[in-house]
Structures are given as C-alpha cells and as structure tokens.
Image 1 (cartoon, helix red, strand yellow):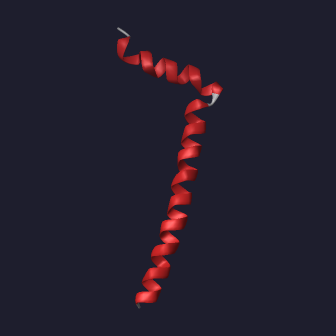
Image 2: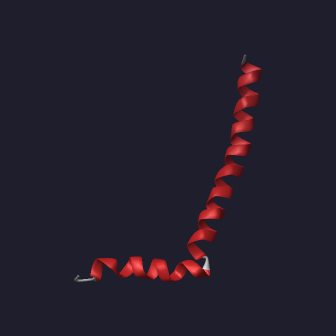
Length: 51
C-alpha cells in the first residue's frame, strides 16, 4: 500500500506540475495574443462608460 501511494504521489506531482505549466502558458498566450488586444482594451474602459 505504501509503495502504491508513493508512486501515485510522485506521478501526480510530476504531471500535475506539467499540467499547470501548460495551462499557464495557454492562458498567457491567450491574454497576450495581438488580436485580443482590442477586446481587452474595450473591457478595461467599460467601467468608465456613462451609457
């Protein structure tokens, strides 16, 4: 039982880290993609609109 738990924990730590790094890179690419800049600029000005 202890050996199984240790192997599972090692697997989760290694691939969990890889998964979260991958998700971070995808979110970063989405946020910095040039075609998205206009939508983010519009969203940033939304609270200042008076309509």
